[in-house]
Image (cartoon, rainbow, N blue to C red; front, side, top):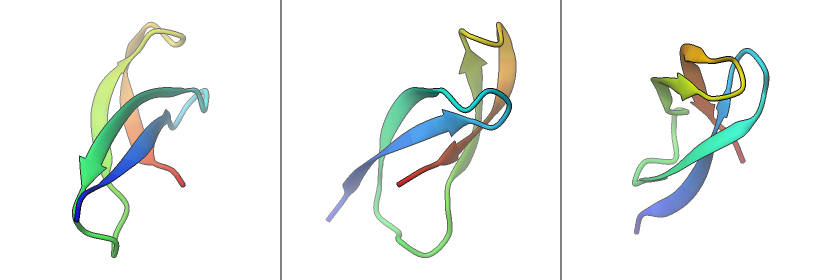
Length: 47
């Protein structure tokens, strides 16, 4: 079953996005646009 998880910016720490994941082993890392930093940064899966 897919879980909804938030994605947090690695630079400023704000939680801008949320996505669904099926795996629970490793954390998801996606490069997305952060409106606070005003640039594309790596967003990591948080709890």
